[in-house]
Image 1 (tube, rainbow, N blue to C red):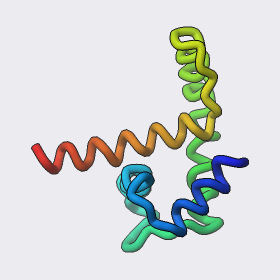
Image 2: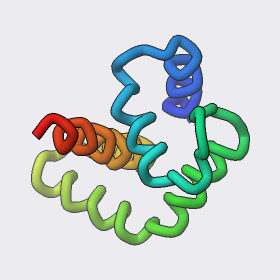
Image 3: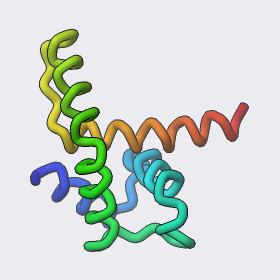
Image 4: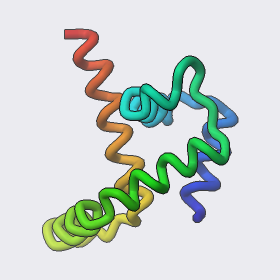
Length: 96
């Protein structure tokens, strides 16, 4: 829950730190985000439903990371990292 509140605050500030996360959301949910990406109840529900759809995979990755590094990331942090990587890759692909 704290991560969701943090995302909401950062979104409002429009900091560069979440630029890749936002780009990842826009790319993955391109049909839902026609135009400007806004954070609202619907966009949060998209993220929550995305997690629910891939819950087994996220739990498996969470356990693997814990086993390898000793770090137990929250599921929301893993979702954040997933979309961040999509957005980062989109920019790298654009530059290459």
